[in-house]
Image (cartoon, rainbow, N blue to C red; front, side, top):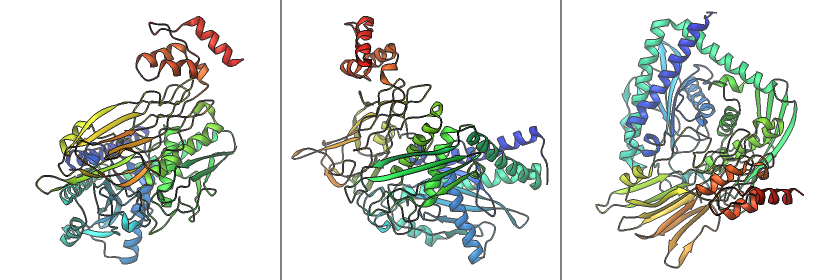
Amino acid sequence: MTTLDPVTFAVLTGRLEQIADEMDATLYRSAFNPIIAEARDACHGLYHRETGDTLVQGQNGLPIFVGAMAFAVKAVIDKVSRDGGLEEGDVFLFNDPYAGGTHLNDFRLVKPLMRGGRIFAWLASVGHWLDIGGNVPGGYNPKAVESFQEGVLIPPVKLFRKGVMQQDIVDILQANSRVPRSNWGDLNGQLNALDLGEKRFQALIDEYGDAVVEAALEAASQRAERLMRDNIAALPDGTYVFEDYLDNDGITDERLTIALDLTIAGETMVLDFSRSSPACRGPVNIARSTAVAACYVALKHVFTEVPANAGCLRPITFRIDDRSFLGVSAPRPVAGYTETILRMIGVVFGALAQADPARATAAPFGTINALSVAGYRANGDRWVMFSFFGGGLGGNPETDGLNHSNNPISTATMPPAEILEASYPVMFTEWGLRPDSAGAGQHRGGVGAVYALEVLAEGGAEVALLGERGRYAPFGVAGGEPGALNLFNWQSETGLQSPPMASKITGVRIAPGQEIRLQSPGGGGWGPPLARNPAAVARDVRQGLLGAEAARAVYGVALDAGGSVDLAATAALRNGAAS
């Protein structure tokens, strides 16, 4: 076994991560689709030749793909083991959400990195394609009861054989999309990222040798495992119980429960989701690989110093019932997987808050509000605007939650209004912070946002929304209060409308000039509201984040005519509330 000195290990670790970062950047700069180019809904990495375990991932790639991609690469490994015929220059393509995928829009490309006729490791790329068929443009069909209604499913197939593209595969992909040009651009961006990654990794291995690089990869995995074990061991042993809810599955208007029993024993942890709701008819089911990936993201937020590779999952046991909606198989619909993994992350936060209040984080806003607006341009071309939107993150022991942030499933960013308006015939009439939406607390949650847009295309547009938190607000911790609920409305000939399912709707038609309005939740609060610094409350009022009446009623803070804290009145309010 080759041993490494600390300097060589540090240099190689940095070089390996830099290559994955460069792969990310290559795709971001070349993708046609704003969800990849602007929002960075993609990931690249290097994976173990036998197990598919994540060895290296770029710092800008989506953390949710760390766990999921290991299952995806293993699906290709199993196919090669079963069918044989692997050649240098082969590239596999698929989007199967039950074989290491997430949902049908996320296309994976997997390529062997060959050294001397043997597989050294696997390179992989995943990116969110804009449209892959299905009943709803953009793929987020809130009424789907089977995956066939969400788009076309491609199992692992060879897109390239010995370096030669199989045009028939491309033709099938193009024929099953409303926006084939966008998907073609994204596909080529991913292929370019893989080509660059292969060149960079080959050059690095040539420089240091196979044995040295393999030793560095193994050492990085062992280091991640050791750090995770140390972090778990620092928590008190015991079982901690927490649960939260989804509004509904889009088909049946009944809540779904995500229940966690988190057990810490020494340096190991068990995440038991067995008490969660059974598989549902609607599209908020997820596969086991997705559930595992969601747990990884939650733990990475808590144990921030642990590196992003598969070693960190070794001390953790997952109990996920395959009869629950957290471990489904085909053809259960899964398009709304983002809503479910966000709730999973929240319940992990909630359970860990009981184990260690000093690390407690209140719930984030907990929905991506997947909005699809689609129609035809004057020349007859089809357009599909799909986007997700921000909200408030949860308060924590040190600070308030971030205002108008992205959810903690990723490092992605919201596509800017300017990019969306330049790409599609829409106009945003409002894009701002949502007052009085943050969960109150000593450290309040972040405030949500308000978005309003009109369609400019003469023929109007078809609108669909797949969201959450319309009925169950983001929770507070350590005495903090919940954030505001999610709200969605649209104008019609008969007046302002809202979804009967609170957060999910499809089949809405809007005419030019009619407005869609989305108000996202704020994050939950941390700590008792009466413990908040009155000066911070006054600042929130001055900045328009909080109303003066709410300052008085919720925080016990009275303001004078100039907006400054009235110390005597505030003391009286707080003393009265505490008595």
